[in-house]
Length: 103
Image (cartoon, rainbow, N blue to C red; front, side):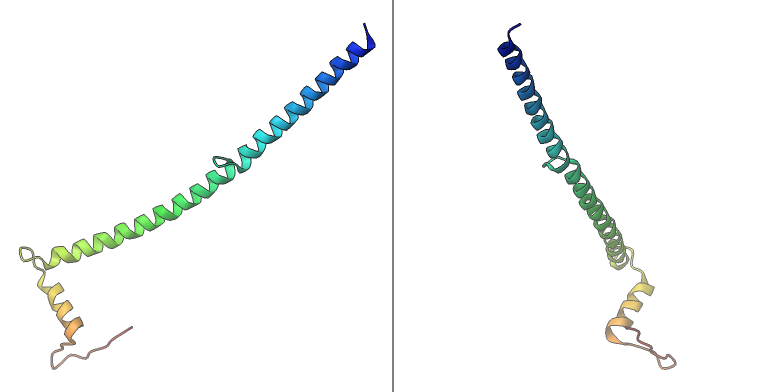
């Protein structure tokens, strides 16, 4: 075979190898750091956990507030709860009671 043809084939193979390496490096970089890469996945997962925690806290607060609303409705009024609210807001106490306020 002609030496120049062999050199030309080796040169093309070398360029193909270099091109393949750079394509692989490019794809690997975006697999790790890309918009939809592994790092972004774990960031989004952490944000999702924070939102789930916030949602569970808001659900608990919502349940407590809906329970308070239900207790104050005229059909199902809870007299003990109403008395507790009146005492807390107005500072009402009976003669034989001692009022202690904790903040």
